[in-house]
Image (cartoon, rainbow over all chains, first blue to last red; front, top):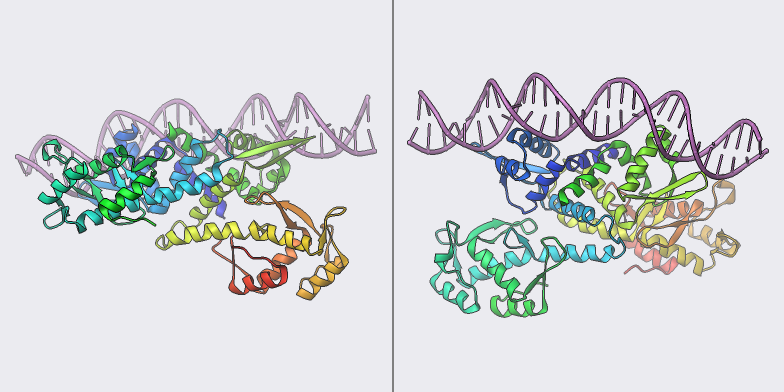
Length: 231
Length: 231
DNA sequence: GCGACGGTTCGGCGTACGCCGAAGTATTCC
DNA sequence: GGAATACTTCGGCGTACGCCGAACCGTCGC
C-alpha cells in the first residue's frame, strides 16, 4: 500500500505550521524546539507535537542535549525533496513550460554553491574552507581562527575582517553542510566571503532559492586567488 | 508566503483517496472520473469532489468530452514530483545512507526506460516504436497494425504476437509518454515486447518503482536487433 | 537545595474534511 | 420524446486535527 505511505508523507507537510518548520530547517542548521516555535508563531506545546510527528514520520531527526531538543532535517535527500516541493508549489499557476531544463540546472547549481544563512555552503563553501586552511589564512590549532598573515592577505583581496566589526559573533565558525557532510566557514569571515563574492560578481543568485551560480569571472577569480576549480 | 503554498500542495496529496488517484494517473493516460472512482473504491460523488480539488490545485487537468470528464496529470513535471514523493515515502524507514547516488542514478534510468502499465515507455519505448515503424514491422497506414513480414520477424526474435492470443485488446496501440511526449507502443505487442525484454534479461527493474535499467546484454541486443543506441 | 527554564503531556474547544446517499443537470442512445 | 448514463451539488454525519492553557517533568544556575 504505497498509497498510505504517500498520503502519510504528504500529510506531514500539509499543515502550514509544519511546512513552515521544514522550510526554516532548510538552512541545514539544527534548531531548538523553542526557536522553531517562536519562528513559526505557535506556542511551545503546539510546536512540540508537530515536531514529534515530523520526527516520527522520518522527516526530522532530533538530538537531545540537556534540556534542549535540537532538530534538523533527516538528511540531504529530505532537504532536496522539500525544496523540490516548495519550488513546485511556488510556481503553480505560472507557465509550466520551461521547467524541465530549469529544474535540472537549478539542481546541479545548488549542489555546487548555495547560501546557508548568510555564508556559503555547497561544494564551493567546502572548497573555500579547505583552501583557506591549506594556505594558512585560517588555522584550526585551538579552535578556528584567522592568522595574522591571513588577515593581511584577506585585506589585500578586499575582504575586511576587522575584528572591531564583529559583535559577539565568532569570527570563524564551522557549519556542517548537507550535500557535502563536511564543515564550511560560517561566522563573520564566512559572511564576509559571501558578501565579497556577490559584490564582485563572482557569484550570482539563480531563481528565488538559495542556489548560486558561479559566473565566468568568478571561475577565474576563485582559481587565481584560492586555487579552486569546480568541475 | 511560500509556506501556505507548500502546505496547500502537500494537502492535495495528504488524503489516501487523492493519493491513490494521482498514483493511478502516473501511467500517463487520461482516465474518466468514473474509472478513477471505481479504481480507488469510493462513490462517484466523493471522487468528483476530490478531482475538482486536484484540478483546482493544478495537479490535474481535465478535458470534457460529452458526458465524460477525462483527467490526467498536469504535465511531466507533475508526474516526476509525485513519483519522487512516492519513492521517498516508500523507503522511509529504510537505510537512508546510500541514497545520494542512487537518487540521481534512478532518475536518469527512469527517463531512459520505464514501464507504463505493462508496456515500455521512456526513451526506450519511443525508440522501439520508431525502430519497428522504420523496419516495417509495424505500419501506420490505416491505424497501427503489425505487418505480415513483421509478424514473422518478431517470431524469429522470440516475440509471440499470435492473433489468437489477443482477446478484445488491440494488437498495437499508441500511448503518449510523459517525458518524451511522443507515442510508444502499447497493446498486445507493447506488452509482449516488455515481457520479452524482461525474460531475456535485456532490462531489469531498479528499485520498487516503474524504472528499468538496460543491462549490458540488453544494450547489445537492442542495437543488433532494433538498431537502437541510447546515449 | 530552590527557582528559572525548556520541553512535554493532557484536556477541551472549534473547525475542517472525508464519506455517503439523494436529488439535480447534462449528454447520449433508442 | 423518454430512458439510461455520467457527473455534480447538497445535506448530514462522524472523525480527525490544530490550537491553546494548565499542569507536569527534567535540567541548569545560584
